[in-house]
Image 1: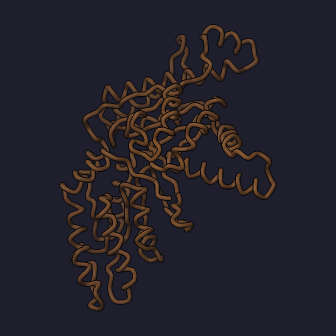
Image 2: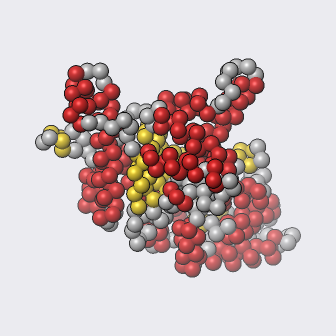
Image 3: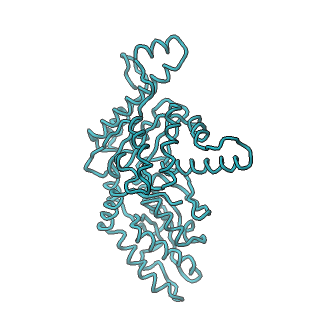
Length: 395
């Protein structure tokens, strides 16, 4: 519980963090605890602002005594991959006493915004709405649904997003929306080298006016430390393999909310059964028994830095199409330096048994790549790449 004037009111992020440390579920780090304390201060500010808005005498008195600011400044927490940013934000999201709140991957949020803009334009064309500019009504609807927004992995790579962010967030902040975001980059480095970046810079200034920027500077990548102790190629299939995959999934997603999502490729929808941040999980049937091609696999690799692939079978006679797609999938993930965690019926050398066609020769390359993708060198190169540059959203 949180102590205020000697009265216990609610649990805090710091208390939750220390409790997990006591249970041995995380290694305590002063930098992380400082971020937890900042999140608690933000919760206090949010509570004070809400109480100040109340028309009761108590609310008026509280606002007068606290000198409540005109708006609540959110937080923008940046640092390298695996430093615990999302874990801390998840604690905040769970504990902040607000009903209208939303936690979402930033790219997914912007995809939702673009969809709403298109729907408004379609409605305007049909005469269903009169307003030409879609930004104000879209912002109003978003603010009505949630006035505390938590964005995971804030990054801007799409010019369509970059061009609307300043106007969109001006409208959101004007409606009292509070932003908490995690990112791999400092705000000044958002959309670096992007097309027409000068038109994007007003958003950076706006963002820095409405958030406090905190650097989570930790040498350790806790996520990779956990995952490096786990196998990334699990065989044979069975209950033990399922448990090992689930354990690796929990270590890699680090408690992030996992939900189904979709990717749009040339107007087609690719279903992602479960995703958390930059990590997605598919079955072999999802990716290799459906009519997917190179463009689809590239979109998946562009959106997610790590792919979990469950239950790869031995590919015998009659599985030629599935084998072709599996070869193409592994080639794509390998070329894009995407991390792969897979459960399979057999070791890579024994996965393909058909003697027909050219797939047998091509599969030799797949075997070699599957083996290489299990190596420590591969893990290190993945960590270096995905610390340096966040994945972009495929549209």
